[in-house]
Structure formats: structure tokens, C-alpha cells
Image: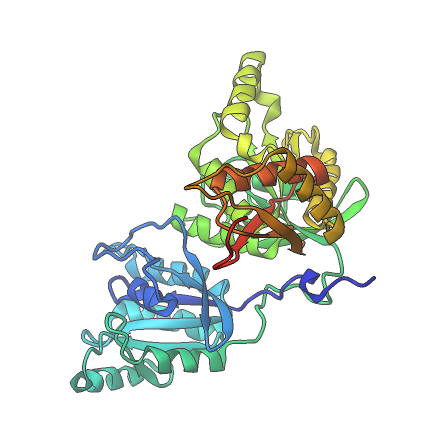
Length: 450
């Protein structure tokens, strides 16, 4: 029996980078396009956001919007810094939405970004923002002097002209993201090596590749451009995506945590399995947990690697066990591997862990078996009565794998705790090792409980 169409991995959506100097209204425009207040809006340039990419849709087309707000310009090397940060963001995108302030006119910072845009050869749509009334459209027309084609007058604050702007953006967007895998997922599996700075990501890549492919430095931020490497682990080929690549200008490690997270998100989007590297010699940090949450939300297979195992004494090992029990319990389904990227200890065990995650990620439960399982757990553990009513699970189906997504059709809303209970029992019954499981609830409107 052939797999349903929903089982195929969805093609990567094209990515749009929203770029521009501080305070031109990038985040306000992002919120306008999304139709909700999602991006942080402040008058202070340099605000760091936990989340920088957003799912967007216009006229039936889906794409990913990346808000590159948060640039910090200062008197020293301002133009170089702006150009470097713009280049980093633009390199991840399929098209660029360049936002300028029509009421201010062209500035040196705008010109610095324009030079990068011309070199990138990416499609560019020019948004002349803050055109809040027709009498200001002449200000927008003055932006022709940037040499990027027609400036589109828009008011991010009031929504004026945003529809026309998006129509033009769709005209230049490719149907499929450049990072999308080709040939229906054929070829080596894509594995991203991610983690906070200085946990040993590049050292691990170099050990696996048996070459000094990535720059290894104690200075955080020495990795900028994504580097793909075909390697064999335990005789099995993989395409490794380092969050990090060779830095061409190490003179200033200016890539802030904001851009590190931008690169990490890009690597997660391209991967099938993410190897999350944690420095075992230090306490598990909030940033480690944030990265794990990002992988789970993206629906990617997960392997947790505890690196620098050669630096651990017995006391640190005891503390680490407690931290894993306390802080990483939510990811107990992810395979773990203890390694030393420096000496190579345990590195070859990665292949088995990645295979386990890939198998869990692609698991498919037949509908009949799933509903028989749901019937058993509902009979043994019915949903609590709430407000005189007891919602019931009517039936369920797995709508997709990669990651496994189960939809429960119910007679009413289920408590979040009960949904977590169902997810936990799904894992106990069907495995899903190394993969997040998404459980969605669809309550039938107007149906009376019996």
C-alpha cells in the first residue's frame, strides 16, 4: 500500500530576509505582514530577539520571514559592521525585502547595505516605509536613487500599500527555498551540529571529517558561514551541517548571539536530525535548553551529545546526572552519546544514535492500530469531568511523519495535561525514539457529550 501524499516531506518554503538600518520600521512591517504582533518593536536599536523567523502567508503562498532587526551601529567601523551583518542575513535568504525610511532619505548605512545586495545577486524588493499619507509618496520616489528598482511606498504602521508590496514580493520569490533538498530526500541524510558557542561543534566536525575543515578557536563567534561536509560515521555516509564555517574576517568577533541563533535556525531548517552538543564539563545552561526547544518546535530528530567527557572527574559526572534528571527530563526521548571530540572517544557511536532518531522521526502508525491503542487508554484512563462534561477521544489518525503528527478528534476540548498523558503513552507504545511527537486536538463543534 502506497504512502499517502501527506507523508512526503513538504518542500522547503522560500525565505525572505527583511533588512535595513535601525529604526526604519522593519519589525513593524514584519508584524503587519504576519497580521499579528510577533516581532519585538522598540525605538532602541540592537534589541535581541529569541525568535527571528516567522511563518508567513500571502495569497495562498507560504514563506518564511526573517526579521534581521537588532543591528547595532556605532561610530567605529559602522559601515563595515552593517555590511557584514547584512551579508550574513542575506546569504540565508531566497529574496530580500529592503526597508528604508522615506521620511529621512538615503543614508550611508543604506548605501552600505545596497552594496551587499548588489553583490549577492538575490532578488530585492525595496520598501519605502513611513509613507503614511499620499502627500509623502514623493519622498518614496526619491529612493529610485538607490538603484534597486521601483521603491514601493508603504506604511507599516497603518498598513497602507502593504498588499501591493506583498504582491510584488511573491512575483520575485522562487516556488521553493534554495535550502530545499532535491530528488525526494535521496542521498545522505542531513545532520546539523548545533549548540552554544565553545561547546566543541567545529572540533566534532573536524574529527568526523578527519580534516581541519572548520576554524577552531577559543573566541566565540569564529564560525560564520554554514559548511556542509560529507563524512562516514561507522561506515555510513552523512551530510553534516556545521552551524559554523570558516570566518573570513576574524579581526572582530562581532556576530552577536542574535546572529548565532539566526545561523542555528537556518541549520535546523535544513536538517533531518540535529546533534545538539552540550559541554559536559559545565552546568547545563539556559541556552542549551533554548536550543533543544528550538529543535523540538521545528520537528527535527534529536541526538544529545555530551562533549568534553575527557575533562570530567567523578564528582562532575554525579552533578551532570542530576542536571540531566532535573533539566533535560523533557527530552528523555532523545538518544544521548558521551564523547570527546578532542580525542575521538565515543564519536563513532554517533551513527547509531542518528539512525535511531531517523527511525523514530519516520515512524508511521497504521490508523487501525492507533485507534485500538486509543480505545484502551481511554477506557483505562478517561478524561476528568470538567464543568459537568467529560470530553472523549472519538478517533485519531497520524496525518504525517517526519515528525510524527497525530490528530485527535474529540467531543470537546482536552486538558493540556491529558494531551501530555496521551503523548507519553504514545511513546511507550510506539517508540518514536529521537523524535518529537506533535499531538493536535480537533474538537467537534456543537457535539453534545453523552
